[in-house]
Amino acid sequence: MSNKSYVCFVLSLIIFAGCQTTEITQVPYKKEYSKYVNDMVILHYADSPVMDVNIRNDEMMLSSLMAGPAIIPQLLMRLAQHQANLDDIAAFNEVIFDLNIGEELCEKLNTKLQLCSYFHIVPQESITKNNVVWKLMEKKDKDSKDYEKIGTELGIDTILEIGIISYGIKDPGIHSDPYAFLKTDVKMTTASEGIVIWRDIVEANTLISMETQEFLDLVYTVPDFLKEQLEKVIDVVSEQCIERLGFDTNNTYLLDEDYIKKTSHKINIEEKLGELNVLRHEDLISNSDYDKTKLDLIEQAKGRNGAGPEQETKLSVTEETNPVSIELSN
Image (cartoon, rainbow, N blue to C red; front, side):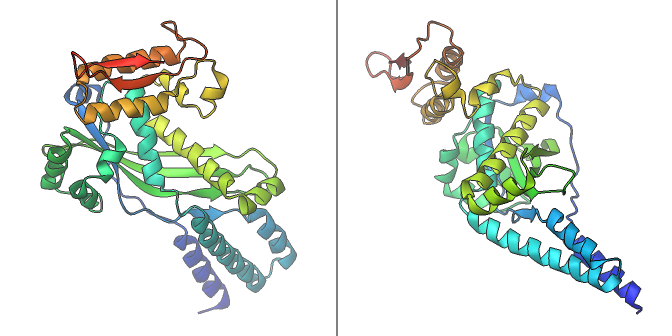
């Protein structure tokens, strides 16, 4: 094999190593499906790829220019860049070891669907408590009996599964801003037979608008900065999922991280909806009481229905004449 052919072969291996093929049959969501959905659980596959990192393009471009047009030095530079990326991947995955991308996305979707849809969603904490469901999450290729078992265990009719295909941080180089990215496989099935009623690839990039040196200083030295960037792209993907299901996303602005600071109405809608959903799932309130109280919470969070500037909404089950009613108290 000639030197030129060998170099091309090695470079091809390097490029192929960083690529992933995704063979997913996409099924469009039809609005008429929604009338069959009442109770839903949102799950994520237990397995997840490691975070992908490629942020040294500027640094390597300068070194590559200095190496000149010679084939061997250029090959060595590509190998050095590949090794540098591997080192970054190992270091950054260690930094975010406690950030479960699938779990974070499920939490976002859970609350957003409560805001935007009429679906009744199983609280995420109820999933982790159920050993049968937890074990089945590890099985990516489920059969109809697996879906039926999940439906029976959680009392639901529809299952939304999230698979993380890839995610990470990239910096294209001197002419573009760095960005966080997330690519997911989203699948909705019936619990009774495991029939796929929606499957799609949902992905997003979120720009990190700052100078390259400032970005590098932060990403290597401030662990929370890295997590914040990934959380932003998780939020965007969750919003896209809501939109593709055909729901009005106007209410999701209430989940903005600065919402409590921006508004004079001190209602943490995400926290309160979570508490309300737990009460519903544990049969402490009825679905109709949940629906009514949820709307009241959203209206108060918008500053309507006389919600005062310092009002803090609390949820409690009334234990007097009606044990399943719910009240909003200060």
